[in-house]
Length: 404
Image 1 (cartoon, rainbow, N blue to C red):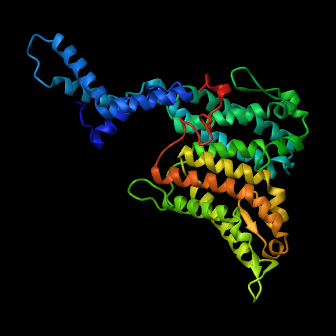
Image 2 (cartoon, rainbow, N blue to C red; image 1 turned 90 degrees about the vertical axis):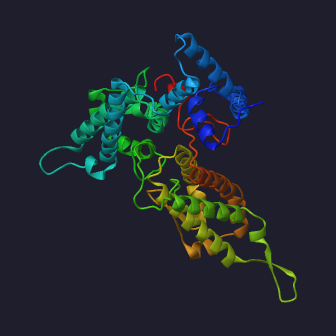
Image 3 (cartoon, rainbow, N blue to C red; image 1 turned 30 degrees about the vertical axis):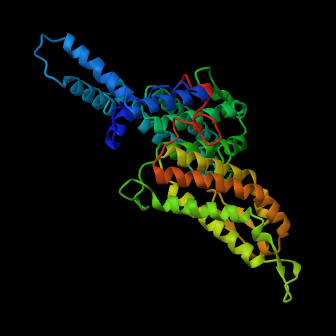
């Protein structure tokens, strides 16, 4: 007969067996479920208590007290909950935190228009850009190096994603004299950098393009360095109610804009269908969508939950890819990725086109907003797990898995 495991014991065992069957893939998930079943039915508890009880008995001369195996097990569980961190790891963690802040400052400099203009004291834009890029490369390498020895997985996951973005932009970086070596670190050729077209550097790090290399890195740094917000409502369980409620509302708006119901033709006084849409109703739904979209992002800027930020990134990227289509309907995307809707332009749009567009975009945003709501209300974290689409560790990069 199995040992009954209450809620507190389940929590204890979750720490103890957290690393079991983590080899990834479908088989890993099946193994994990098998592990959990064994924990739930008490098999692991009995096995470990028996094993450590026998170990304890064999190491004493009969003076051991009955039940000492439980003490050994409790000690192991406590060590799993509060693992000892080496001095080297502590140093790597501290360097990573500092490095992320310094790198964020470097990116801000390269995104500033002032960096690309000559100064009155004779310092040329070329000199300023060269200095800024060199500073960026140095701080980037410091972050990557620190991440390799860090245990701050909620930060290293985003560093890996940043490295993936760097690899994707390797050709553009090479054009300005920056190359990516086999270890994922950056190297700079000062001569090539000085002769590079400054407009290419500015375009690469553009803050106006939310899909630029600089904006992508800045986004990852923001998430990696994020801390708990003092401007949002958090309940006793750590759930961010502002983000969760905004996400839930956005989900509802996205589904509504993707539905057939919203675009039903209006009826005349005799109850016959006309060829006219209820434009006011459609606009009000789109307006609510824009409002909740911005509210969710504004409230989530300081979230460190990887499940939240991964899905926010998906939404932001989808919006960037559809920026032209949104603009056609009077919905603009600003430099920070926030939406703004023009009522006149929207209401003059072809509603059949609006319906076709939101059938895909609206439902897609709703799906990710639903996951944001899930991660905020449950406190779950996806930094080292599987995404809803079945991909592993969305913040990470398989190419750099061995480096971090």
